[in-house]
Image (cartoon, rainbow, N blue to C red; front, side, top):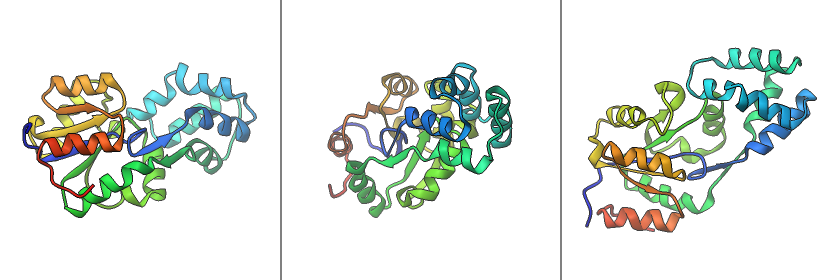
Length: 207
């Protein structure tokens, strides 16, 4: 058996919730009359989305900057819908999370995300509204994975030593950074694999 686990952090995107950035660019393009490839450049090549996910700009500032860079004036509610209706549940993970929640095991989310996307996910996916004690968000920490400091901040927020925290993420660089600060971090491959990793560490739950 490996070291004891007192807290579990899950990455959000492509672990509990799937997403499609290409869909986001297409939908924003449709409501703004801007080609999707230009939308992609506005969001990602200018650093606009990164600044939003780091919490350096507010939703209002993001909106104003998108309109300025695109040369379009789009109602905020339509832009928010187009930018956020890109998520769906990673169904195989539902029973894993539900069984851990049923055992009242301390759980958290550790995600690189903007507040608008996270609020959308909370509104639309009930699994995120119950049983998670901590939401560790890049937009609140002002840090993004794989910066080691975000993992230390997440451990402090959970009130648990890094060595007692299990973490899984679909991006290897994030896993490696978490391991370097002491997390019991593993790459996410499948729900069954994560359940087995947890059982190896003595986490008892039905799956």
